Image (cartoon, rainbow, N blue to C red; front, side, top):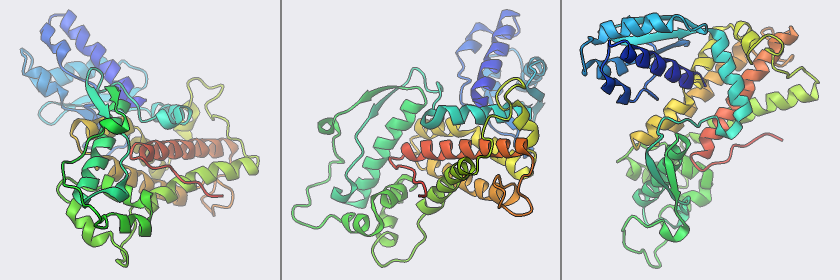
Length: 363
């Protein structure tokens, strides 16, 4: 995964500066993994980190000078196209399209594990069973139990050492039993379905659970936020299925040309495709950040960004021959676009699984 590769290269550069006496040994203890964010320049191939400020506090190098030294070293990496300091000391790196396409190829092969990383290595987490939402005594309890179960899985995916709790160890929110009173979430589960309710809870920000009692009840006409995500996954998966039925070449377009995805990097050239590649590369970082911040709602909102970006790709660069004027006619372009469809399907399926939801496919 591209962000993990950037972590490794940055850590090696920091180690080299320590060995050369430019940085104190304590700089090696500053966490680097998971600090990358999209670059401020809007380029989907740009990644920025503020770890230089934390290291700079240890002295004797100011963040902007440290960023310049690190950038000089990183520019020697073949798949890094550019590296430079930005702002008051941020480090911004631009990778090659080939590197991002190789990352997408890795996601296809990784499948449901493509959201994983070692960012939270050394941390611990409790993985609780998914709650029975229909039995929750209140929307707040349903939200809390869903959040607890989800945070544990996010942390586990990000490399934390996990203790899997049994049903009896799950615990409760401490709310009193409702006795024979009809559970308030039950009607919503029966009307919208358990996956829809679970997703609504998963994407709800802390403190907003009570709002669901007003908008997630039978008869209230509101858009289902799960639908576009499920639809995008189904569309990506059906693209691959249609390709197989049409006997289109789904082989890696980079085969025979070096690393996986090397040729795809040049072929996935439209703005929509480049934006999609950049967004996909942040999946493990988003998972780890949601776990670290105890904000599981950040992952569903990221999945919604991926879904919207995939819709733009379908319109601008369809892989199948019946996609209109923008459809690919070159077999290598078809393969590259199918690789991207596979990465989208893997990312969405992995993200939904971390929310306790199975991705749907069209028959």
